[in-house]
Length: 135
Image (tube, rainbow, N blue to C red; front, side, top):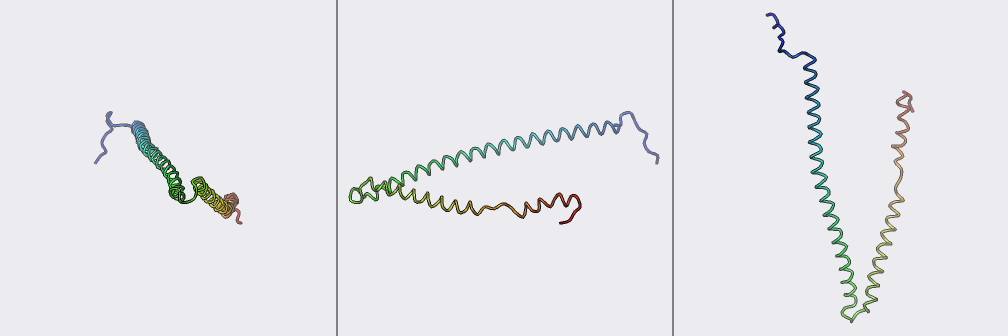
């Protein structure tokens, strides 16, 4: 069988390359638009989530304040316990001791932080390896 003769309506290689590059460009633009729209939805949901966490944190702070007042009044026990000003000072002192303990533990944990020595050493070996040198 003989090959079919080329007709004027058949696309040329240049035309095919042009069409393919245009289609790829359109595809990439559409993918970018899709990614932007998905990211916009994710960022919106994330922002709402962060706002809800902030609201919950604020309510926890209010609850701790109310609990502190309740503990102080419990220590006072309707005037039959310690005087009210001493009760509030006890609650205040408890929070100071708790804060001091947290600072102490935090300092000990921060002192445990070390540089990634093995990773740094391996990073120093990279230029030698690229030059073909061994350790």
